[in-house]
Image (tube, rainbow, N blue to C red; front, side, top):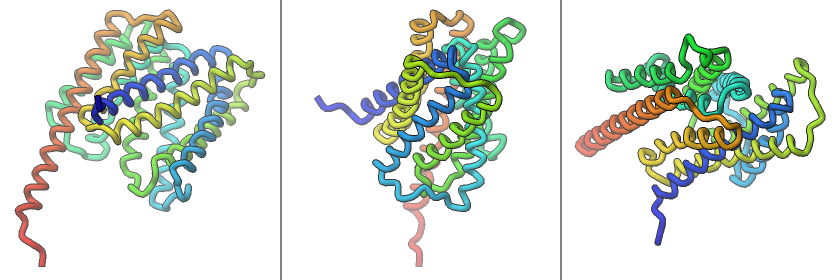
Length: 306
C-alpha cells in the first residue's frame, strides 16, 4: 500500500525531533566529562565537515554571500552562538524534559517577537494563547521554588536568542541556500568552542566521549536533513505540529538515560505550552490561507493589463 506524502512528512518530522533529542542526550552525557567548550568545538568540526559534504552533494555552486545578506548572517550567527551556549549550559544542569518543555514555547515567542519587532498583525485570540502559553512556562520553572534558578533563566534566555535567530532568518533573500547558512553558522559555533580553550582547560578525550560527540554530531545533521525533508514532502499545516513530539522524546530519553521524570506541574505546564502553540500555529495557517484565497480572488477578477 502506498504511503501518502503527509504520512511520510509526519514520519520525517518525528525522526527529526528524535535525532535532535539524541543530540541533546549525547551532549549531556559527554559534557559530564568533557569541558563544554571542547565538546562544542569537537562536535562543531564533525558537523561542519558533514555540512560541507552535504553542500557538495546538493551541488551548491558557491558559498559566497550577497552583500545584502552579510549583515543578517552576522546577526544570525551571533544569535546562534548565544542560543547554543545558553542552551548547553542549561542542558548540563537541568532535566532534559524540563528544558525541552521550556523550548516548546519557541513558536509562541516567535509569533510575539514578529508582532513586537516586525509589526506583524497578531489578533486578540493568538495574543491570549501566547499569554496562556507563557503561563505554562511559569508552571514549568515555578518562580519562587528550587526549580527556578540560573539554569532555568538560561533556558528562557536561549529561547530569546533563538527567536532572534528565526526572525533574522526570515529576512534572508530566497537565493541563499539553507545549507550555506548552516555552514557559516557552524563555523561560528565551532570557533566559539575553540575560543573557550582560553577559559577552561581541555582534556584528552576517551573513545567513549569521542563516540558520544560523534553521535551528537550525527544526530544534529540527521535532524537538519529530516526536518527539511518533512517540510518539503507533506502539507505544512499537518506536518509542522509534530515538532512537539520532541517533548515526548525528551521525556522518554530523560527517564531511560538519566532517571529523570517530570513532576506533575511540569507536565501540566508543558501541556499548556503545546496546546497554545498548536492553536497559535493553526490559527496563523488559517489566516494565511484566507489571505491567499483573497489575493487569488482579486487576481482572478482583476482587469487585464494593457
